[in-house]
Length: 363
Image 1 (tube, rainbow, N blue to C red):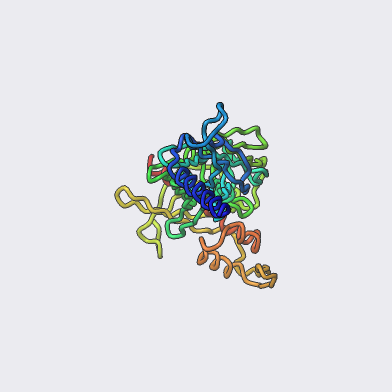
Image 2 (spheres, one colour):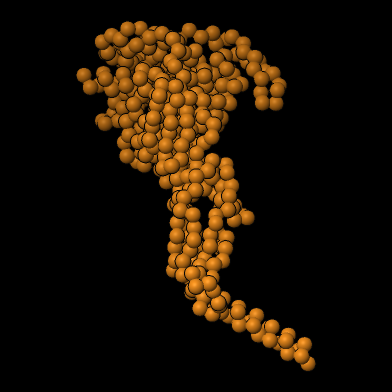
């Protein structure tokens, strides 16, 4: 009988303690105010919910009941979800350079933690041209937790980082930021098959702080940081189509044949290697370029695909292939497989034909 009474009392105490736990009032939340880690790191947030527990005996200096709670057991929000990922086990993974805020809420109490991610290893391939620092577009954007897509029909690169969208033209300096016009400090540059953009895009579009010591550029977004190695300009890039002639007086002549109705711009520095066609329709200016540099289109090129199999094609066949698949594959991949053949094909896109047409029309 005694054992039965003790057992009944135990269950009554257990039941009553559960009732009290459910009725406890949340007094506060303990949370680290800031966490700094590396991109790719995973960790658990140390979240403690403090209850105002008047039914339990406590030390005079600690009249509250504290319990650890997992992130997924709270009502949480992330200010910049492109920088952080909450895993199925409740851990948080940093996926981009920058700072993001996680706000946890239990009942009516909220607390926030700022989590900042930095890149441990520097990004190679930065370049300095005509006083403008350019950085590898795809690699840098991906480090920010964003994506890059090439829209072949529009001739532009679409960059998305969180809620920010930047459209960069393949040639020219007229870009857009969330639908508003943005003027680049220089056109995009293709170097060794990699497309580079002006580093100023990072500050204009994403509020990044830029510090350049000549060999390395430090990019800061919040408390997150990454470094980009900057190469000194070479005497002549291997992707240059033809050494430009001295700039003469710009003028235009009517085009004939298939381009009848267009005008041909004359007097620009690349006249011997590129024909620049343009057409003005009200406020709309269309521009088309044609490569006339001396290239042996019948030259045979041997290349190796990703499976290690070798193929042989003419330069003309490969140029047609590049045109049809533009935007389907990355520049890095195509350059890896086709080398200088691809670099010479894409170099024409780096000529700022829009700039010369604008100069002529503004005369």
